[in-house]
Image (cartoon, rainbow, N blue to C red; front, side, top):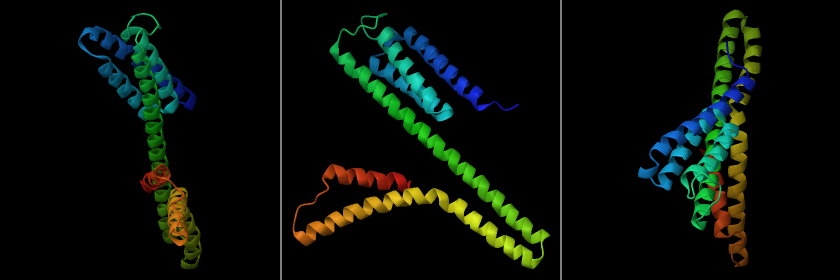
Length: 208
């Protein structure tokens, strides 16, 4: 019997908490032989796995628990939430921000992969339905059915391209217009290097 969305969500939270607990026990046994950077990477690896399999919400829980355990068990003074060395604030903050980013990016990649798989199944369904219509219907009826199914097939294939292409077009147009305006008016570019970098990142990510 397949699990319900609620059961799967609860399973994700439980596995995230149990995974942090297990990793913490292993790291505690090795605490005298490893440094904080290694501990942070171990927690990040677990958060990445949780995000890929269970999504962003369980990964968020794993991130919070990892920060707590990292501070409580591995940053002196041990077994307290106090932080003696100000540099450890930097380590905790970096671990938290990195774990959140890793979790969100992994969950987004998982979501896009699921969307792509769903689109693939829809295309296959429409293809077999189109093929079946030719076999079961007369030529005239099959032709009419073919047009309807081809439109649906085209919509299914192109749906996932519209938003990325819009973002790519908008970014490229903005940079090109800025360059043309600068050349025409013999003036400096209005979009700074950081702005162009962000637009190029948008183009690169949406192209992927």
